[in-house]
Amino acid sequence: MRWQEFEGEVRRICEAHDFSTKFRFVFKDEEGRAEIDVVAERYGIVLCFDAKLYSASRYRASQLRREAEKHRRRCERFSALTGKRAIPVVVSLIDDSLRFHSGCIIVPYHSLNEFLTNLHFYLAEFGFL
Picture 1: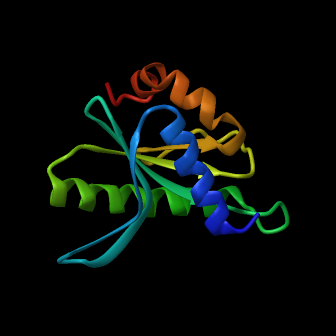
Picture 2: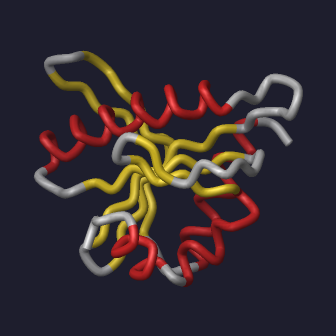
């Protein structure tokens, strides 16, 4: 699977859970240009997804933590621009024990459906509700 297909799969799964989506959402602010792979909104909840297609050979937990920090910052910028509270979520193809870092939820791809099915539980668990 290529990264474009991976992002599309994240979008498709969100839409299957009745989220309205914006795909590869690009915005510009005083810090410059930024892109969010999938913005998914349902019932006033806005999830901003960053899809990471790491292979086992180049995957590192430290890299995922860095990406989570960068994505959280992008989501803060998105929130400031739109006035909507964005919840940052990184979806990683490779499963790791890391589930939350620096204000960003980390979901393994194989758990995305379950995450969205039980969204309110996870949002409460990580302090977003």
